[in-house]
Amino acid sequence: MIRIGALISGSGTNLAAIMRACDEGRIDGKVVFVGSDKPDAAGLDKAAKKGLPTFVVNYKEIIESYKKDPDSADLPQDFDIDVIAARMGLPGDGTFSDRDRAFLVTRAIAEARLLANMAKWDFDLLVLAGFMRKLTPYFIDRVNIDPLHPRIMNIHPAILPSFPGTDGYGDTFRYGCRVGGCTVHFIDYGEDTGPIIGQRCFSITPDDTIETVKEKGLMLEWELYPECIQL
Image (cartoon, rainbow, N blue to C red):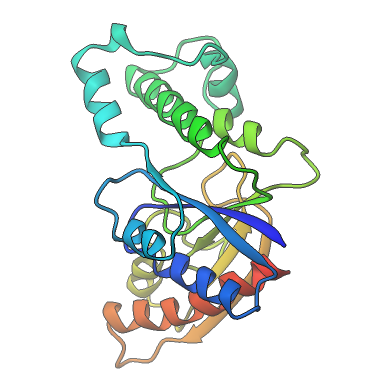
């Protein structure tokens, strides 16, 4: 039985699909915790109704606190900003911008809290089920302990490598594509660039709208994600 941790930001429809697949035996596993960056994420209620432990690391509060007083940032002791910057393709000599520094510092604080919460449970796989925060090498390297066995999986609303980023279905539709789809992949340091596990596609007709494109995509996501986890 694979032990699955999940991070979400919103309604948790993919989380629900994963939990349902576990209950029905389509995944030989169980969800052991659900975390979120937003206290009001509806998916937390879905998890609580299943009796699952949940936690929140409020990224927004961390970012606002840093903006008010950057010098008071409570950084984890094992955080080296130059090392993390270099792994993300930024200058590793401290010459990056204040904006990049703020991003790296606030992410490190938030990710250290994620890791501290996640450490309460043994897990084999971490699934990002609509988690809308980019993870940095600080977090990734502490979950992917063995480079040959990645443990962070994500689902993206486009046929990667096309249309990475936050609005895959919208980008697909606006570009005029006649085929859309979704991709499950492992996480690496890039933006939706990790090794692809599985993909599904659907036709986009002249009658489709952005709303119907998203509906078609979600239906496939709920099938594809559990299949890739089981794989």
